[in-house]
Length: 332
Image (cartoon, rainbow, N blue to C red; front, side):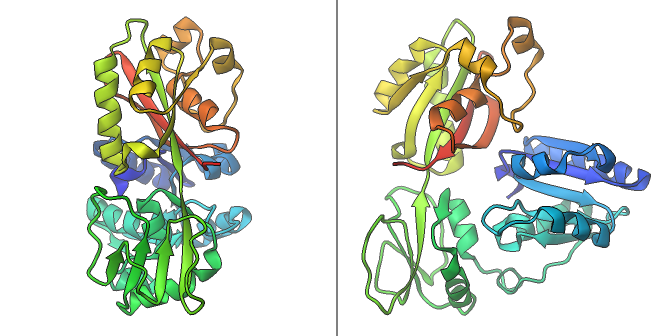
């Protein structure tokens, strides 16, 4: 789970002991090659952090973390997983978004820190999948969250659940009670737009999201390196190439790769780069600052994905001369 938190983790600590614990946690998480940023509570812009990271770890008393969370929590589909760790790192407690990753993060943190995870949601206590976790695996948005409870209850009881519309070749090992590309179950998770089902079926509908790939590259564009990087990216995200909607770059040469993948290409200008604003962007490297750019890969992905696109993978290097980032957006 931790290695899939591509937007990174924010750690927020309150006391001096909490800060030391937060630093210890940050060091432990380095091996997972994901962004981890540690803030002191007094300096943290929590409203922005809430929107910009895959998960937030509060290192403080549970009561304090709960009061903070209550100010910002909106809905289970919008809020990030929230975890609380005490100053002595004895306990790791999922506070919000248990089905959306907090339980898994707490378990893995518990192992890393030699701490005790406190899991209270029924599905995770029994090691079961949830609709939310399935949507996260498939990189899809839940369209009718009001049906989640009934299907999660069925998953908890090991009843048969059908998932309709998974592309062949996706490497996901589901338990035996989940039937892939079938509609014979009473409970269905559907990825097929506008498909009608019998009235007695309980159906939760997922919208598979398209991805916008942003490429940062030096002037000497090496297409083979970028091509290989895109394939490695798809393998990491467990997606087929058909989920790519657009590839974007400031280098016109990258258009050749978009044509190979049979997707749109968006040429991004330096003016667009430097006029773009988003509080979640990774700070520019020293090299980018020297050439007068705020960023490339992340901004390119977000511009190409449109105004409602969301960054899901911060820029990562794919070679010594290229970086890649990914945003999701809803296909029209």
